[in-house]
View (cartoon, rainbow, N blue to C red):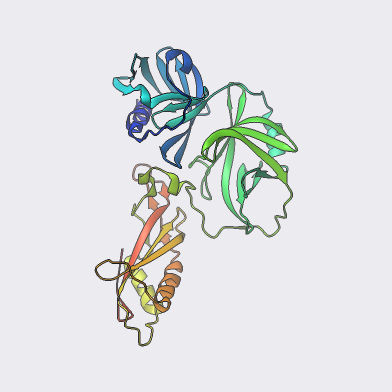
Amino acid sequence: MKSLKKARIILVLILPFVSCNNNKSFPLTKENTSGIWIASHLYLDKDFYKPISQILEFKEDSIYYRTLDGEMIGKQHIEFLKDSVIVDSNAFSYQKFNIINNHELSIGSIRGWRFSNRASLDVIKFDSILSSTYWQIEDNPEIYQFDNTKKEMRVINGDKTYNKYCYSFHSIEGDLFLQKKGNQLSCDRDNQFVEQVVSYAEDKIVTYGFHKGEFKEINYIPVKFDANTLTHVPFQLCNMYLNKNFPPDRYYYKGTEYNGGLYNVRKIFKENYQIPLENKESGIFQVRFVVNCEGKAGMYESQAFDYDYKPKKISPEISTQILKITKSLQDWIPGKRKRTNQVIDTYIYISFRIKDGKIIRIYP
């Protein structure tokens, strides 16, 4: 019963966010929707998406929702009328239900593609080829390394640092799907866009999925790379889509706090901040940053105001010091989701009230 409620929430609550600007779109009918669809993500706004990775099956007068492993999530009754679609007891305009270019599905904010059998592939052989070398998507600068012993994936940046994720395989009607997911703490969370494997060989892997704003074939090309000097990035978001998710997923103050509380933060600044000589500046200097699920901080931004909150500049002898000390605060207790108690990335503000070059108050 709980799973059925979750499925219903998806269709009912996300519909107000619809925005479809494709020209070749057709209203959904019982005939053109019949079959299996791969639900890739939620479209939230221009360039804002949230991966969901589900199977939708339209069969007779019902929609069935399943995980990629086939586990039933929920079921809803659907009825196609002349100018609307009835989902359970809710009526929606046809404008919110479309098939685009005959193979892309748009149901409210859900976006997906029509499943079709492409090839029956050997998962063991594919995993062996995938982990045999380094790969680069043709239009991406990052390099991918897959470890089939741990099912870990490294995304290597230009400075020879890497972000750590995981991957898994799923079989749907005999076809193979690649699911990138997880983070540096856990593999069982934060899915990326699922990809259907089209073909593979030692010199090229082709998948199909959502990439750079559209459904398309994704080409992986093998590359040579010296991994001897690789280091893990000092700060990694646990949810790589933090800034691309639905706004509530950006989480402000979900229980995030510094170890020892604000008292300890003030103590550290009192011990380390040097009051600039003959500096009579006054105002408010504010630092915003992210505390990830590990309790590490990064992605710093700053701004300054006068006491009336009008933008102003603060001299480097003050601002540089404050930023440096703030960046040294790396003993955070990460925030958590209330329902699941899962640690998450959170945004944090710290404000510094300055008078005559002195920090007279530190507050959230």
